[in-house]
Image (cartoon, rainbow, N blue to C red):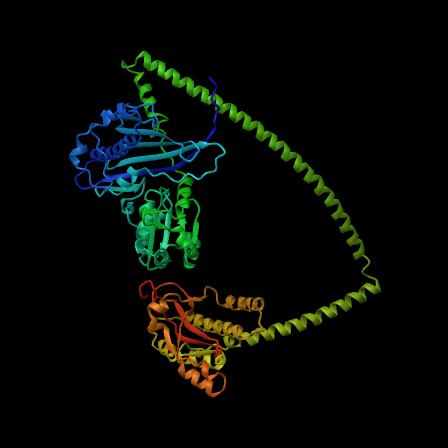
Length: 640
């Protein structure tokens, strides 16, 4: 018989988690553990029955005759089904077949453990999946540890998606159980729906930060979504339940958290970087390192297959990889390399040990010894390869050192030459030449300085002469004095400015001045066909130096949903322009849509520091028409 070719395999952890599972209502901790065992055994039984070939699993299945197959509709298991179940009934059973299932129960510690191996060759590459599960009780809950690994042929670069066993979702959806990540308070229980945090509540924000977001016990990454972005995701996916669908497919992989109303209080101090990204319309995945998703990526990221009823966006891969990077440490005695073999070894210490037990243990030990020797040889080979690479790097460094020494000598000679030349500065020719150059340089600097200052003064003269008060009349008078050639303030905007009742401090009105100043500058650039884009970018940088944190962007779908709010009458302005001969009669307009806005701040209509200018640029009048300021018109997020 020809010897079989040895295949090296890489091993990768594709899922790992530790959960604290609390019984609710009338369940005891013991009942809770038995119920969890039933979920796992029901899942195992269905797999064995599905994979049963030539009755290879019949012997194993005979031990599971009283274990029902858990229905997929997640119905609550009747208490009498599992309450009388004896965990010892599954102690030490196992079978060597295509699935290699092994189960053991350690009565002394009340610990139940299972290992299951599966070989999948459907992709053309043999992949060995191994699932390890451990359950043990604490005073008021049960700890459940799950670890799934995949072994695949070395050199294969195929992505193996995260594997969450079916029983895990069933347990997380069971109404009689409260499931949290190990060490996390029950108030942050994992459910089938997205978790929400009131961003306006100091108490709730602090509790969420300390209890989950900044809790060292948390290993599962957190997906943070602002309320406004939730609306954008819903619109992009055309599904009102998209957040719940993301949570549905992410149970056990990540938390999905909706930040309501505002996110500034929640992300203060340690999370200011996240605040900046969320303010720019991004979603943050907080795990071992932050990952940011931009709005234009939403349709592909959060895609949901309605026919398969499964969320299959590209966020799935990022989520899986982020969880795999988490440093989830298991206690040494939670898992065994092979619980069936460990149970056999334990028997050797008692009267139940037989000669066959000793022979099996010896074979297993010999096998492990050979594996250890092979691993040692491989380590020695890798060590020798690393040593050889280090020698090559040393030779390269020596060559670099010689090159640097040569360059250093050249630079030294150059410095010496310049020093000698400097000693000859007393010559009349050198002094005369230097005087001419210095005079020319002074003339150029004076000319350039005067021109730059004049340009700056002309552009920002209005800001230098800001009104002293913040009354609506003073603001309107200031606009008409300096910007009447490029800005029209509509009667609707005059009224909204005069009727503004929310408390505005001087900083907010200064922001309004600067935003109007920027709008005037941008309108002048649009009107001036000779001003190039690069020249405008330089000028715009001056405005943004004064106007930090302010953004200009389209309004979007709100102009259609709230058309009455975003439509203004412009007939009077066209009447005047036509009368003066500035606009042709054929171009007359009656109404215009406030399709652009300059904004600062995020929040509701009455929030301090929030400033908005809604306008329409009219290319025929060559002016920006301000239709509403300084408050917030209705948006597609609910009219805020």
